[in-house]
Image (cartoon, rainbow, N blue to C red; front, side, top):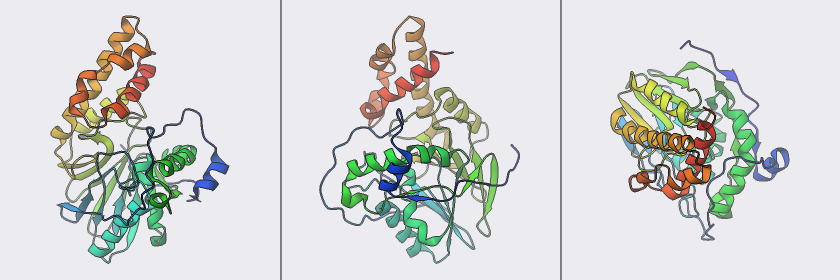
Amino acid sequence: MKKNNLSSAPPADLLTRRAACKSLGLLAGALSLPPMIASRARAEHPRAELQKIADGIFVHVGGHELPNSNNHGDTSNAGFIIGDEAVAVIDTGGSYLAGTALRDTIKAKTSKPIRYVINTHMHPDHVLGNSAFKSDQPRFIAHGKMARALQARGARYLETAQDAMGQEAFRGTEIVLPTEGVSDVTTLDLGGRKLKLVAMPTAHTDNDLVVIDEKTQTAFVGDLVFSGHVPALDGSILGWVQVLQNLGEKPPKLIVPGHGPASMGWQEATEPMLRYLGAVIDDVREIIASGGTMRNAISAAAVREAPHWKLFSEFHKRNVTAAFAELEWE
């Protein structure tokens, strides 16, 4: 792939829930989190526990849960990389409080400035903590397609997050759009170490971005990899398989999945993913070939995978629905 400069995205509008609802509306068919019951318990300031996975690289592991008032939307992995001159944050959690906990932990770890906040994709559990970093005035960087996608769904994400977490845990949460977009490959310099950012074709979403620390060959792959938590499809199931296979031709030494442990080897991380995605593809194709309907697929496709994944009932049927819509036109 050729090396591109970062492109300018729309201005970094900070959309409050009310402003977002007025300016964007709620789009029909937009992806939202599964229905949740909001707890009224008062939120306490969360703590971001860290694991050091390589020299200068730290990861906070989110829980395999749906967002609620107790976890403050802290349900995905986030991390940061420290260079000689600056810090890059990769994903920020699912609320202002989750992002604040991460930021406070970074500030306790290093006095170097937070120069970059990088999002691996648009989903709310990875981006709603961005607002906690506004005062650092970083460059907010993402895939070139993320700004438009997040702008389209932002109102729904905020509304669903507030309903799930309750007002106190949700407080301060805003949409922060990326200021710069990556269309192919670009490099960021932290001083003494460089990060390679690679925009992926449509897979988990249409705006997946992989962040590779060249010094340690550690890759933050976002939700291209789920471990434990069942994968959630919002792009192309065939594209997802292809992207994983392509990355596996020259895999990084270590990866940080979007959901799962702080770090994993490539094979152990992707084998269950490819098994699950393959089971969905094979079963849906068979049902389509036999004249079955989407309803048949939802009730039967890849149900044997249920024992291997958490939150299976919350996400699997939606995955099958999306896969059926894609595969029926092959």
